[in-house]
Length: 81
Image (cartoon, rainbow, N blue to C red; front, side, top):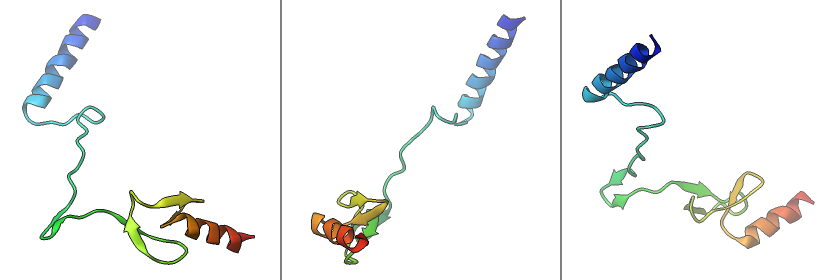
């Protein structure tokens, strides 16, 4: 009985995949970055201290806020005191 159920599930899964079905957590593809006429667009963040925009890769995170440099992080620490 259990063997029949396992075989049935495997066959159903293969048929599902054959017709283009995607299985969550198995078929996870990274979405490509948006293409723009000037190239790919990157996500940006605004510095919580000075307001400069920078890419999210370059941002320094402190207390869930993005900063552009160590100086801005230190300035925000002084404001909190």
